[in-house]
Each structure stands twice: as structure tokens, then as C-alpha cells.
Image (cartoon, rainbow, N blue to C red; front, top):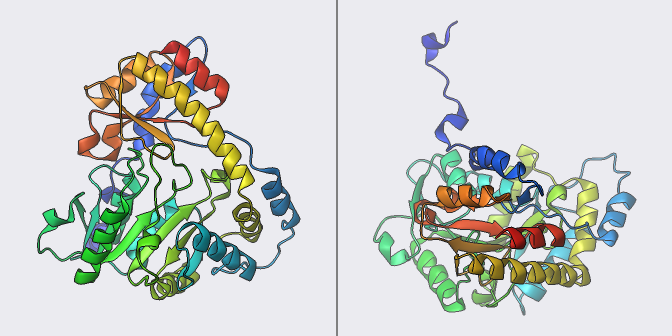
Length: 368
């Protein structure tokens, strides 16, 4: 039978925006022609070594012929719980935890896993990680960009994303703001999901977890975390979500059916990473040095740095269209991400990552 007999199939990807990093390829080609080579400050992929204790744990667990647990091993669940209790929800153990295959897949599929769909509205920040919007579109729900919940009015909302420290801006949301978001959402029966992947990277402000403002009651609140930047585990795909135990169980039940499972050796590596803070301190010091060098160079070159109080990026502007700034930097062999990737209000900024070696950061500073 032809497709017309029963109606044409519509590809899922047809309803999604273009993959942003594909659009950056021409600028990358320009930057790569620089005599001293490319300095890639765009996507934010870690370049420093995976900690030795994590590699050892992975290797020791590599003889893993059986299926791993979707919920995580008891050892991993304990490691996540202890980390969350120490850094996100001190004084409470009433939260649930669940390992995830990095954070991006959870962000992309969480609205679907929570049963949101047509007729539901999901609020995302005005300037934010593009996958928040993609996840809403995959679920068939409606996207609403807003930083002030009072602007939503009486509209029924199914879920609210918050992100502190922000990707891309580095903005830190105050504790009082997070409390207001939780109260607002609970009054309306909405779920609040906080992306806290950059929580371990404070600079000019100390971010707090949304779990710390729940007073031990985590109903309708989830926090998403990643080991990609904290422990250089982007290649391992290692993350987790914590919060409302009922929602965690709901997501776990769906993930069991879908086969969304963290591989057993990676689970062992996560236990090692979560149990050690020395390597986190060392990595934070590396990023602090690179941030100091890069920020000073950008400012000398006429850029204004806005927000950037925490996290892995500098949110920079020359007061012009972000693609024009990307081209200006590419001519100097430097690749940055246009703010337009992150929403219309980012159209006059670029996101500059700290994820390059000391030598490449120094080279970028010289070129600027």
C-alpha cells in the first residue's frame, strides 16, 4: 500500500528545530584555518583527564555480562543519596534518586516520561538550554518562555523548568526566588524541575539546590544533576535525578519498559566519582584559572560580560547580532556559540566555554 492510502507518516524530527551545532559548522571551518589552529570554546565538552580513581572503578567493573539495574545498584543509590544529602538537601532523607544516561536524555524525555502532552504547557526560561524546548516538543506539549511566573497569569501549567547556575548565562537564582517558584507551582499542581548540573562551579555567587528550599517536603519537585562537568565524565553519560519519591518511581517505571539503563561499569564509576571531592576541587581550580584569563581578554577586546556568576561559561556581548560576533571570533580562530541558540533574547550575546586546555585558552587570549 502507498503512504497516501492510510495517510502520510510524519517524521518525529520534522517538528523539531534544526540541530544547533550543525549550524555552527561554517564558522568552525573558518576558525580551523587559523595558522595557530582552532580554539573551540563552543559546545563545552571537557578536555581534562578522567580522574584515575574513576577509570579504575570502571575497569574493575568491566566484566559485566548481566543486565544492569535501571534503578541503579544499591551502592550507586547510596552514593547519590549521600551526595544529595550533603550538597542539596541537608538534614533530610525523604527524597528519591535515580541514575540517568547523562542529563540530556532526561531533559529531552522527562515531559514524555511524566505523561505531559497535547494540552499541557511547559514553562522554560527566556534564555536556556535548547533541549528544554525539544523535550516539550517531543511530548507534543506547548512551550512557554518566561522568567517571571506572574507573567503566566491563570494559564494551566504542567511543568516548570528552572536552571541555576544557568546554561548559557551563568546567572544564579536566589534562594528566595526558588522558594517562590516552588510555592507557585504547588498552588497550581505543576511540577518544578531544576537543572543543577553546574551547581559545583560557583564563582561570584553561591548557587543553591531547589531541594534545599523544600523544607524536607519534595512533592512535585525534581533536581537534575550531571557528572559530565564536575568529574569530566561527559563521555561516560552519567547523571541522576533526585526529589519527589512518587515522581521518581513514576519515571523509573517508564524507564524500565524503555530500557533507559546506565551501563553497569558506568554505575561503578559514578560511585567512585560521587565519593571523592578532591578531583572536583582540582577541576574547579583549573576552570577558575581559565575563566580569569579569558574574561580579562574578552573585556580588553571590548566585550561586556553579563551574569556569569557561576557555571562553565562566559555570557559575552559586543552589542551586535550574535552570529556577527561568532564570525568575528572565527576569523581569529576562536569558536563560540551564538546566543541565538538559547532563545530570541540571547540574540546579541555569545556563550564562551571554559573547556579548553590552558594552552588553548592562552592562545585565545593572545588573539583577542
